[in-house]
Image 1: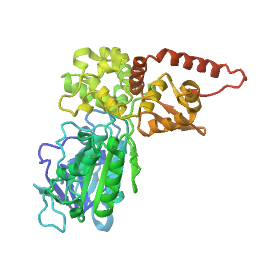
Image 2: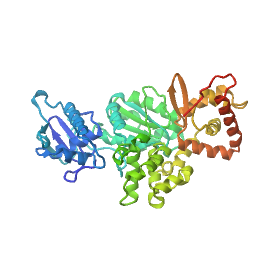
Image 3: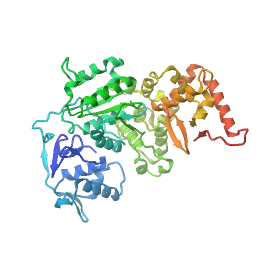
Image 4: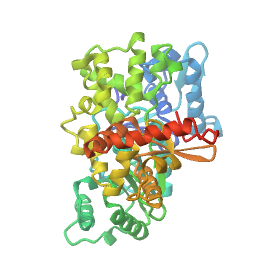
Length: 494
């Protein structure tokens, strides 16, 4: 929900022991952030900004869920969560009351401060950060953003992991925005994609932090700050060493890293970023139901930005679901596809899915190169693989469904690729978010994202090996469907 027009988005709304920082969408009790989800914050903002007045249930629902049909029970759930978080009713303090037949009212006195508040121990608080301005709202990430905001100040070192295009940087920046008021000495983004030489990492960090020439990191030992180390995957060893040193010498420092694979540093907590939610076939009953899924919300939002008057109709539901499914719920891919809506219309976008890299080649000029197109995001990962990893990724692309380790060995292992090496590479590709792993029935299965498989198939065709490995795959499938032993070998699953 966007900030309402009548209140400065940088204002702080104070009530009881709480301070609601509108710009950061953060509620602090002293210097402790409250655990509130995105919708609960939206409800609270509407009520607090209309403190002393009754806001009808219909008006609340219309402002908090402007594009969805929502039952009143959803509103009651968030009201109850707010009351619990605020300790409503404890020690005689009352914040939110239900006015029968009319709605809800925020009854506690509210003070409006035009500028963000200082921390209790400081008389002057200068906001220190280098975060870029966010130009668009974030879709479908409330849960993981809230989890990171709550955990990061306690755990100190967390790594957000996922494949290219899934939105790691977007989520990390949102978390950093929400924690601006928590860290007294600043929140700093360090984009490591800008350098390739591990020897430059420390110097690049000191320049980003705007330290004077000759200043060592030890001089920051008492700083209460957050570092967002973005795109660590190509500098893993150096990043691991640096992070362990920083955490040891700076006991009040927190670090949020993003990477396509875990850093495996001491004290690391890994949080894997899932794709946006794609509606199942069973949800195609109404526009309102389909709009409850974040992949569709993002597609519609970006389509409206490109084509004035775009509206999702019931006859479009199957097409939009197919677009989001084929694009794996990847935010970057969905945004780039929606950007073609004015030129191709929905059916044109769907028709181009078989050639998704042509469809997704019209990138965002203002984005960094690796985020301008989906192919650029995959190139960034592929070019950092070893030659053996590149070869295995290409050959595995002949699998049209999830596959087991044994299936991979049967189809692509050879004298130049012994079994022991193949197993290690499979684990490495999964760690680097180029394959996903699924556990079921005591068996580990690997699966490609559709977009990654399409990319790897193109590489396999260029290598001249596609025909040979397609034949090996076909022979394996034939054997496993009708095994000579009479026992069905379930190596491939839908």
